[in-house]
Image 1 (cartoon, helix red, strand yellow):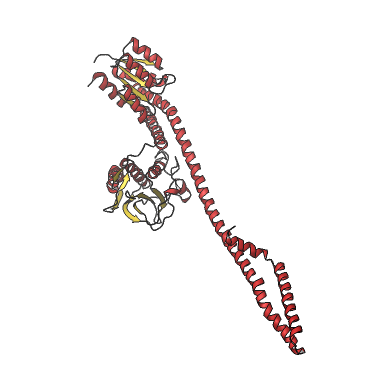
Image 2: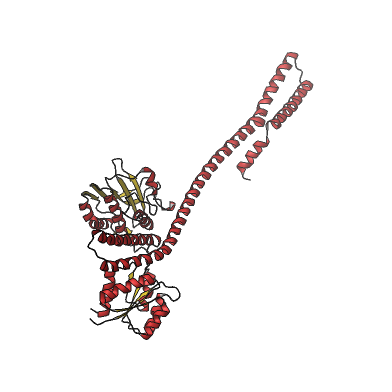
Length: 123
Length: 354
């Protein structure tokens, strides 16, 4: 299995830290952490990640805005939304902007593994 | 001023002194004229004069008394009686209006409280779920790195994970309650929904050694239902009943159609949701043989987070959400203790064609 580059964009630093650790240990992938939308977009521009895990509710540029900007840079980058509170309305906006899936916090890691694995390896 | 009030006023004006004055003057005038006529034009014997005087007085006084005293007094008293009856009626009407206003006020306060809970829920959900997510991720990491040779270590990790899941379910319950999703209403029969809900709790019934007795009437009128929500409602109620019978017992589930003979108030959030006398409704009754609910707590069972269950069992939102689902279907739910012990839950559903 080739090493993949995964980007986590989430303003909850501690959550991001443990999520990064768990993914790294499970998949031995390179996992990067950005704590806001602008930082995430800057990373995407320089290092095209293979997958983005993107928080919806963030101060300043929110997840949906960030998603649209990522898709402008490269529409092929798969983005999975991560959110504490999911609503149908917000979900519709996410999928329309190009997200492929979503997971809710607290994260069921098995569900996350499936979401990542299926997308990264298209299997 | 209408005719009635005019007559009452006129009767009131003819007060006792006024009437007495009229009486005296009338008697004096009539008597004087009559006796003057008799003295000057008719020769009367001395004895006869007294008799005629008495006769004239008697003949005059009765009509005068009748027209000047009796009739006005009767009219006056009737007027007073009518006014009294009107006052009594007005008092009754005011009392009813006052009670209706009180009920409306209580309802407004309740709605306001629920709205506040809803607003709080949305804000709290986000702020609480994020730290929960951090704890969950940290536990997932620790589970791989901490030595789990010791039973206590394994249990500690499991307990934290289970506590996170519990907290999450409470938040989700609160969100469900505060922002209920719109209903997907279709014309359905109630029995298949009830049977489906029973199949979902069958395992729990068997595990708790609870006997199931069902009396589901055939040919029930169709209802407009959101099948999933009503199924959820029944599952909630069945689970409450099961949890109330930890030592086993009997769960009885009935459905029937009924023509209401009493349009009395049912438990609900809106006075306008009262069922009318003569209305056909579909009724479902769920009875258990558990310990029942303390009488002083019966009025609170629909309050958010109120529970009679032991700590760790349930979120206290089941009945709140159940009453909300029934309310959205314009139905009613009533909970009462059975004389034989246990609880009876009665659900009323409006028939689709009404």
